[in-house]
Each structure stands twice: as structure tokens, then as C-alpha cells.
Image 1 (tube, protein in one colour):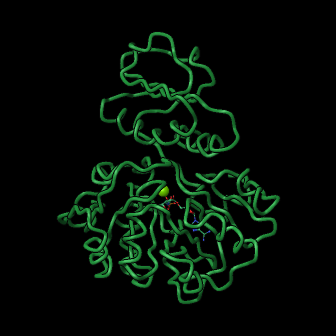
Image 2 (image 1 turned 90 degrees about the horizontal axis):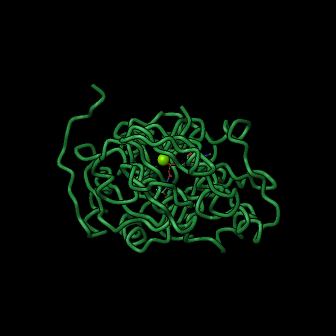
Length: 321
Ligand code: TXA
Ligand code: MG
């Protein structure tokens, strides 16, 4: 069995109660503006190791370090290049993760042996209160079982991790629904390793050119997480450009911007008004389709700019087999 011994998972809405579990070396799921994270104290390597066990996460996939304040950056990064400083000033707190040279004190289990570290300051109020109360940098991947859609509600965290983690800090539904943008600032120009809630256009507005990583090439090697199949429901995901491509049968779901014919023929059907809503609802919809027994989900791709780039990336990975 790959199942660690079961424990009672405490639910709380108190950031300080949740932080007391983390300070004792236990795992705590907490809301952020993107998706829920699963946190451990960066400086307790055994606690960090247990994140990989609870999620079933491959050991070669590094974790993002979450901070409450900019003053904590020098504790985890050896150096902050000028471009990174400008980005931190502009987008922090917010859904941007910067890859920086790692401080030697950060245990290698956090960064999967890499000499770089991902750093992010969430802007979600409960996340900030939690991180302040932890009073230590917090390593946290998304709080899902590895490969599953990221959790956008505390109930989705419980669905995947109840009995495997000490505590869930309960918040509402997350706002962005897709994860942070991961930007490698150790190269010039910086490289987007994972498109996310901060658009490439917004980054370019602050630092000029950025390169967008090719998920099949060099950058895939730099960001090990992007190599693995991800974000996927149990149902097969089929990408379409127009709803006319949909084959209807009893156990089929549909999500997209365009209204399909015969909406009622779908088991689950979610027509979204815009790309922001699509991104916010996607993982939630995937989990809903699994619960209702859909075997196939048709998902409409969107124009590949702004937030659409991150959304298409998640759709493509969910559809990959
Ligand atoms: O919005 C988010 O980023 C959420 C919330 C909880 O903050 N976190 C999240 O973590 O999505 P995770 O572990 O699911 O994805 C982190 C991504 C992975 O693709 C990982 O490979 C990459 O960031 N990453 C982390 N540290 C890295 C590093 N030092 N170098 C390159 N890539 C790194
Ligand atoms: Mg993840």
C-alpha cells in the first residue's frame, strides 16, 4: 500500500491554529489566490519530505517557497537579480513565482536537489495571516494528490488528502483557479517555465522581453514539474475548437465559451462567459464531472493570449495521456 497511516485531519478557519500544526512539523493545507497549497516548514526537512509522501509526488519535482514578507527573501535566496527585484516590487504579493539562486541553508529536499529556489508571496488574506503566524518560510505544492486537478475549495483538498495531513485551513473558493506563473530569473531575459495567473503581457510591461519556455525542450528539464502529466480528472479530456466537434452520449461533460447544441444531453455542461471564469472554474468542473461519473469531457480551447495561455496549457496537460 502507498497509504501512510491515517490520521485525523483537523479543519479550522483560524490561521494561528493552523500555523501551530506547521510549527510542530506537520502538514497544513491553506488557501491562496490561485489554488490551495500543502505547506510544511522549509527548515524541517522531514516535514517537507512528508509532503511528497502525502501527495504521491515524484521526488524530482521541486516545491515553491511561500513567504509572508519581502524581508524573508534573503533567508531563502542567495541573490536577487535586478529584474527579479523589479518584478517583486510590482507583482508581490500575488500569483508570481520567481526562480532565484538558492540560499545554502534551504534543505535540498525543498528544491529537489536544484541550486535554484522558487519564491512566492501570496496575496490571499488568510494565506498571509497563516504565513505570518508560521513565522518561517513555507514549502508548498498544490494540495492535491499528484496528477489530479489542483484544489480550488477546501472540500477538494479533503477529497484528496483527508487522513494524510494534519490540518486544513478552511477558506472559500479560490479566485484565480490556475496556479502562479513560474518565471526563471536566473537567465537574461527571464524565461516563463509555467504560464499562470500573471500573463506574459503583464510581465513584459514591467521588464521588457521575456522568453516563453517550450514545455518539450530545455525548459522542461529546468522545471521538472512540467514534465509530468497533470491537472487531470479520471474522465478522458478531449480538446475541441468548436462545440460542433462534440460527440454526445450519456456520460459526457462539456466546458467552453461557446454554447453547444442540445445542452441538456450532457451530464455536466458549463458554458462560461469569459476566460477568467473559465480558469476559475476549470478544476472545480473536472472534479464535479468525476463525481457524477462522466467518462469523457469535451473542453474548448481559447485564444492563446493573456490568461488564455495558462488555461490552454492546463487543458493540454489534462488531455495528455
Ligand atoms: O499557485 C501556485 O503556484 C500554487 C500555490 C499553492 O502557491 N503552487 C503550485 O505548486 O502550483 P506546484 O508544486 O503544484 O507547482 C510548482 C511548479 C512545478 O512545476 C515545479 O516544477 C516548479 O513550480 N518549480 C518549483 N521550484 C522550482 C525551481 N527551483 N526551478 C524550476 N521550477 C521550479
Ligand atoms: Mg501542482
